[in-house]
Length: 461
Image (cartoon, rainbow, N blue to C red; front, side):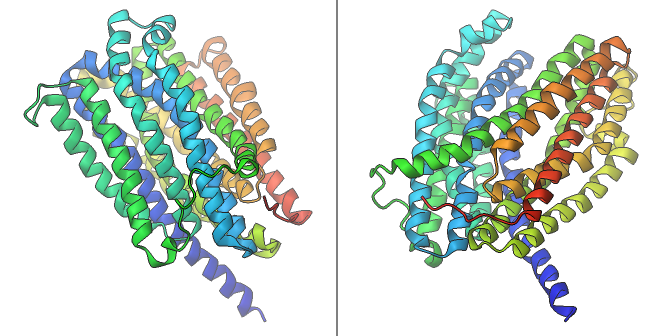
């Protein structure tokens, strides 16, 4: 009798890893797309790099919101598959409305980003940099609709537990993006060098490749093409669209709250001093790379829990959620050890650690990595637990957890510690760690409470 539960847990570990690992690698390819652009912008010079960073950060704020909105397709598709009632039709309806949503949100996003120059000047940026950033944004903003549509299709293949389809397309996208951005920025295609606007064109073409490439791969897959995702694409489905926005809007705001608290921390570090902001940039960039792994586990948890939620199987839901949670915590042990004990080696990737002029930044970056290592456990816990709750279609209450943890407690505490108690950059990191811990504890308690009271029926739309 005892062997059956152990077999079930072992099977769940295997299924979660099979689903999560390609998702993690796909997330890394997404990071690599942006990193490639940044590296090549640096070849244009420091001013172009600064303008590109301004444009990218402004653009990313809108992209994160859009990604959060269409992320709702993953738990919706998973629960529909779990119910196993008319799943082909229901899945097609959800994917269609996810694509509609990608188009709908891109329209206001594009209108705002088209006027990036006055926005950036209003934020106190240098006029020349604001103008250059705006020129770049006017080509980059066209990448938003195809990229969000690609995210919808990526969620579909993840919910179908066929993530390798998206991974292959993502790897191809990194290669193509590097080639296009290099050629258009520097004029290697027989045209005049386009500078930053060329990078925006290259990224837009790559986003189109990601979407159409994944759509073609789905059409060639025998199991996936039977869903005929683009059938009756122009047919309105207002109930399903409302359901998607009802579930996705809180996810979008939650992701926005988390992203903007780290953006705000960057500006605060700038008030402390140049060494602090440089050290913070190194530490947060490495932490952001390691963060792709719990994000993958979180999406895997959403899919696995969502399928159990659709079938109203609370035992399977609990097993799926806790499996992803413990796998993420195991990974956190690994990354924490690296950040705690190999911080100097990590910093050496970004900076010459033996240069005397770099020593203030190196010392601070190593210290910041220690704090980043300590909050790995909280970061993994809150990311995966929020994914588990999304599998239960629970997104509204977690939104308030994020608001309280990040903005009401975490960031204000960091500011007080930094400026009132003289802890400077270390105080900001303590505040960030506290905010993540609060979200992790609140989300985990809610997960336990939801399991204790059983799973309600997944609503069909």
